[in-house]
Length: 323
Image (cartoon, rainbow, N blue to C red; front, side, top):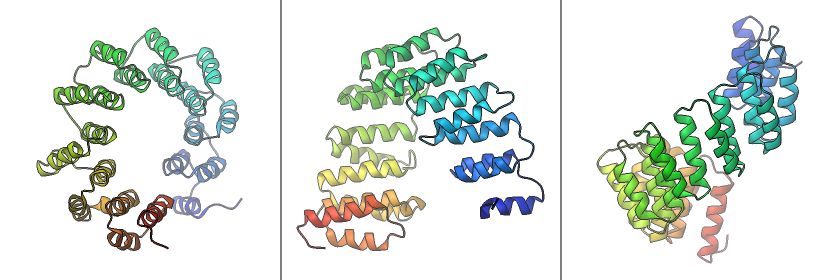
């Protein structure tokens, strides 16, 4: 067998056979083929070794058959093995398979129940997720977050808020943010603002939910106002998601001057090199009618993906200019 360069380096520098750590490292960096090679080259496989590769399959769409085959080879599967396979069934839309596996599990922990609640809701089975949630012998913050998020995603904000008020942890930022996002998605901006202002603690995700919610609800001016407050008061450090939302707000308002300020600001930060940020800036310049700025930035981008190319093409088409 020919080892990939990365695995050959690990094997030669370690001067011993590949181990579970090598499998885990490959899975962590998204190199599933490398993880499989490391797994094959690991002479002494433990349950943890199998679980590492199983986790890789769970993260990769369309690898349920491989995951099932690997699981059946585990000499002594533990609760992590079962939970990982369970998540793989749900991630691939195999709800019936997940039901059967969950029912047949010889042991379950709270992660098993949480996986079912979250996975069922993501597959549209919200009522079943609610039944699983109610049947849980014990719940933690993840359980409450998953169920409130499920109800909010389904548009049932009345039930989501009712469950939110029943949660034992009243200072959970994730729960509060879920309500802000849910009400924004439902078009109830005022209710979203009320929850945001009442939050005991806010983090970057909370601020992003408010900004993106304003943009979704055709309130780009409010989105820019909130962003300026974030930056000027140094409340939290904006990330790629923040900039994408606020640049869309600039586009919707044709706020070219403010867009340029954001461009200058983010170029001073590492995230200025992000392809997503670069593409958002290109799109903003095009939509604000500054094709020269868009072309200049596009040419300066070290990496361009198909979204960046599409933004530039759309800009030319919008300006009725030939390529």
